[in-house]
Length: 206
Image (tube, rainbow, N blue to C red):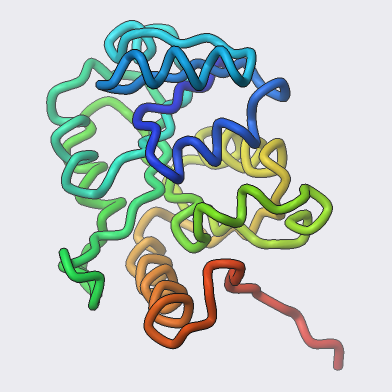
């Protein structure tokens, strides 16, 4: 399966570095020169956004929540698996703009007619991608989606990127995962823990 990363901010670039050479990857951005430069550095393909969408089976939305909403409303994404990595953050990062009875993942799914949205990667900082792969092998990436086929495809991407999978169930689990992402932001920035932290889910032996 071909994976496209649309948007090359810190998260998109980090995922690109983790996936390059390990999966069939294409990069795309409104800044085509930036996409071309990063692709050349990583030895992967880059395309214009519309072309990347057309050839990809899985599209990672490396976009803020509001931009992701606009993207899925306008793009031709029928039959695609969309990976939503966003948190619906307030402009000052003090909290979330929505939650409890819906989520960014669900709102994106409402607009992504004909596509399957899977939530993933929203609970880790971009800086984690720069850690050695052996250091992140047990760091969980929470995955939530409504169909087994789409979830399994994204779980394989998570493993390929060098992380552990924590299946959180259907897409409505994003209502829980996005507050976890916000908590990580508060701990990392507001409480000075830094960006080398990630939430874990442990089973305690009896």
